[in-house]
Image 1 (cartoon, rainbow, N blue to C red):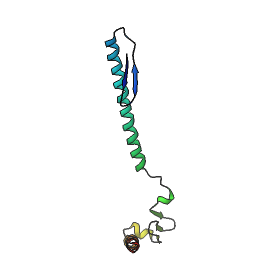
Image 2 (image 1 turned 120 degrees about the vertical axis):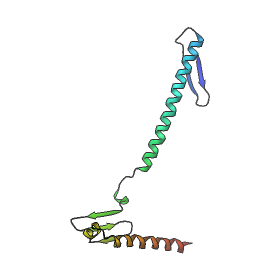
Image 3 (image 1 turned 30 degrees about the vertical axis):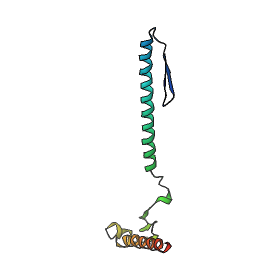
Length: 116
């Protein structure tokens, strides 16, 4: 008995038993199992691709901020902010860091508005 699944082109043949009906049932079971495995593999591949797209490479180019404790220095790579008051930032004085982010955002918005 040979069964072809037309949408996928998957072919299953079975000649284990003398009865055609038993061979047909056996071939259908094998076909269902293979189709299920294909569906599971595709779902796993899609999930894996989704996870892979969410994971970053953590290159130096993707760094947001660098905290250098021996030099008491903080650098925000997105805004270009650099200061030598890391101990104050760690203690909660975030105003200069936040202000540099606000200034960079405003400059970017003005640049986009000027391009229009």
